Amino acid sequence: MSKIVLLGGDGIGPEVVAEAIRVLEVVNQRYGLGIDVEEHLIGGSAIDATGEPLPETTLKAAKNADAVLLGAVGGPKWDLLPMTSRPEKGLLKIRAGMNLFANLRPALLYPELASASSLKPDIVSGLDLLIVRELIGGIYFGEPRGIEGPPGQRVGFNTDRYSEPEIERIGRVAFDAANRRSKKLCSVDKANVLEVTVLWREVMMSLSPEYPEVELSHMYVDNAAMQLIKAPKQFDVMVTGNLFGDILSDAAAMLTGSIGMLPSASLNSDKQGLYEPCHGSAPDIAGRDLANPLATILSVAMMLHHSLNESKAALAINNAVKSVLSAGYRTQDIASGDSGEELVGCHAIGDAVVDLLSKG
Ligand code: NAD
Image 1 (cartoon, rainbow, N blue to C red):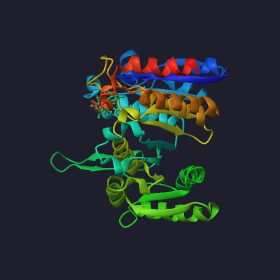
Image 2 (image 1 turned 30 degrees about the horizontal axis):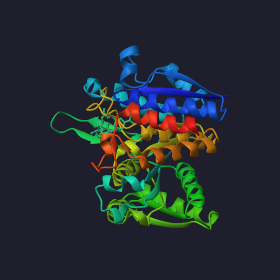
Image 3 (image 1 turned 120 degrees about the horizontal axis):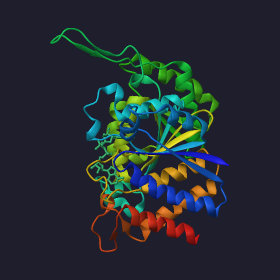
Image 4 (image 1 turned 180 degrees about the vertical axis):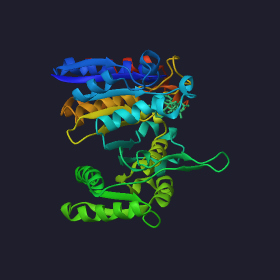
């Protein structure tokens, strides 16, 4: 029996998670997975109910589960709260609380969606890259941090900090991923300016002899941003720290046309994981059946593959999503207006995936 904790969150979070859960229920029955789902609160909805963005009961349940499926958190209702009690704090706390140091973000361009990308089809068609981002260290967590000093003279500061063991463990995840894919790994740093990334580069180089089949290269982050837009297919697996990974993975997301298509996995050393779409709570479209749930549905596939070792069921979901796109179903974010397309809402595209999976 596997236990999954479900965190709908805010905005479109509960809508996209509802579709993903229907998909999970179908494969649960079809493949006899024995999955048990338990729902909890996070983000703004948790603040409204309990005063906390991550209630203790949620963190406890998450730590005891095999995996967590999350929608998204945040929204204008909570934007004026102090930084320490905002919905997004719940997300940072659950990542740290579960020790989820490795964030995997695949950016895959489905051929059917080539025209949804803002880049020319020949630059992006066939794109299939994986960004491995360190998630619980670096400047987002480093101390000291703060804003100090008298009005008019205040200083804001953060600390970018990585230890050798922290770099080594994320490096191993990236080398292993590259080994399973096309054996090319690009480590992204700013070693010409930042000592923390000089150490990052040294550790990546020290791991390299253990993975003789993987070709390791290094790139400064400014060039990596440029190259991702200019010639993204040169990359297969990229590994980088928390801040650079946050920015580069969003840039990579846009290469694929819509953030509504991109799943992610955040893992700890026990393969326990938190799975979520890369997008936020999209308050502009919340409650209107306009959200694309495919990123969350694909996150379920990542969950089955990485945390539950159920690759067959994961593949069935990935194939069902491909078939739904081939059949022409499009939510508004991925519609190009071509004649073969049928514009549908969040629930209807979920229906299409569920139907396909039910029929096998
Ligand atoms: P966003 O990702 O929520 O939305 C950006 C744009 O993409 C919007 O136009 C939105 O309508 C569209 N979009 C996003 N997901 C979509 C989907 N599934 N289908 C169709 N269109 C989609 O980013 P934002 O507007 O910068 O942030 C909104 C809120 O979400 C903020 O409170 C922010 O802090 C929060 N946020 C949360 C997470 C998270 O929970 N992991 C991540 C990013 C932002």
